[in-house]
Image 1 (spheres, rainbow, N blue to C red):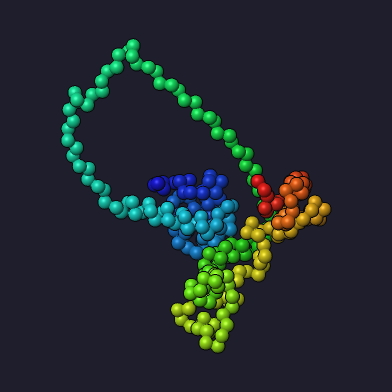
Image 2: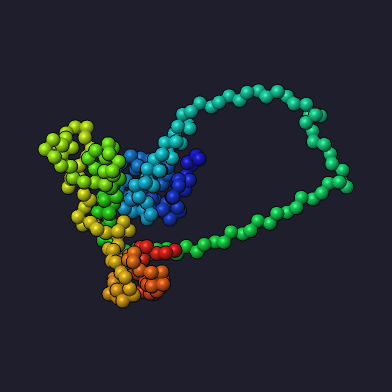
Length: 248
């Protein structure tokens, strides 16, 4: 797919195009320059709603594929042999024998009503911290247990390397990465949901009272049954509280 305008990019809507214009990005070339600047990328993630590191990477690949198509040489069309017009002409069907084609009525697709999910009221410091955390999470390596590749019974779940002869514990070259404090995200947004909400676990309707819908969102416990879950979700909708693990 050729990218001629900003709306041709996947996941980029007209509302987000207006937000880009406020940042000084008005066309595809401006966006391409911004994607090569890490500070601009962080500002894009913080400003645009519903845009994360994965969406930004997808835009980069789409723009790179556009350049590759431009640079590729055009293939010369081979001359096709001339066809005999009389042989290839379709046979005429007499009017009496011609039957009208049956019209197939396609069922209309039911339009699903989509309701916008509630968003928290965040200050600039928290927004900046969430954008930084998203970038750090994208660069963070996968931490795997020592010799996970050798013995299947160990699994890939992280365990601290032990033993006085452990090369991984001594952090020698060409060894898997070890969990260190430097891989952590900003402390100001630690523990927050990716949307920016503070998660609160609830198990009944009474626990919904006293929750601030501007800053907090609820997660229904896994032991709660379907009947009670429906009651909790209905009450949360009345109070304007976002449920992070709704059934539907």
